[in-house]
View 1 (tube, one colour):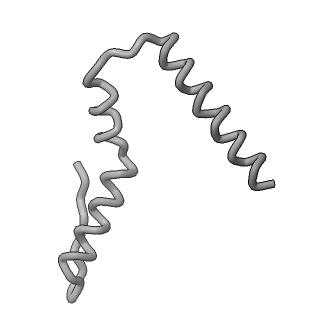
View 2 (view 1 turned 90 degrees about the horizontal axis):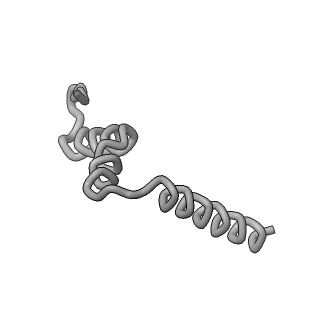
Length: 63
């Protein structure tokens, strides 16, 4: 359970923004989406490798 203490004089928008940030960090939504459909381990591994290769090419282009 995420608890956000609203400080005196703090706007509700700022408190909501802090809540959203904390919620993102927990990764609940990401995990929920990944559980919606089963993905074989071989496919998951392949996707991880694809992402790694893509990131590596991006880093090489910068340097």
